[in-house]
Length: 197
Ligand code: GRF
Image (cartoon, rainbow, N blue to C red; front, side, top):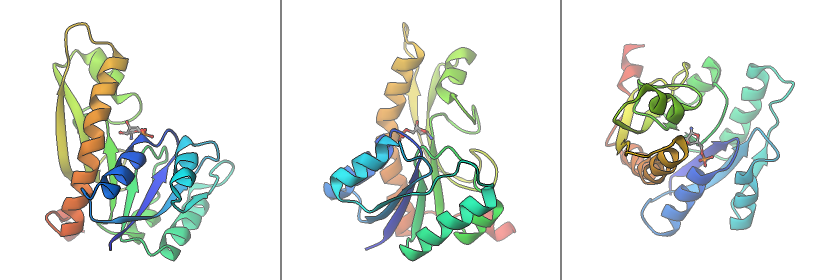
């Protein structure tokens, strides 16, 4: 069974969707460890409830390289095959990216390369686009950047506000992330940018 390490900072709905898809037999993998950089992340209580191993590694007051080294050590110890960022509010150091080449994924609530960074749904709403969505991509050391694996589109509707749009995008995120993880684990897609390095 392929082993996932999931990194979170907050609510954890994408982590829960992945866990539920595994339980439902829609994704052939197991969650080896959930790691949060914040002790108060709801994702940690959700992991505990489900009996999924979890670990808090506080990032506050540490430099990036020190914190990342601690996270890398826990992921290696858990023997993960794939690292999935799911609402992990930290930019990874180059060392981290190099530790798991082609094996780190992220989900972002826009159609990248449009609207990287914080409040992607609000950025899309304010720009007046008619279509947004979500993107699962391989992670490199730039924010919300790296080869795209899968995107799902979500239309903006008359009368939408940012909350309604965010909720509609989140529904698609919960489907997209497990699909993309399955594609990578099966070897249907690989990070071609690594060949150029
Ligand atoms: C999601 O919108 C994800 O795309 C973004 O952060 C949010 C995390 O939500 N990277 P959750 O913690 O998975 O509920």
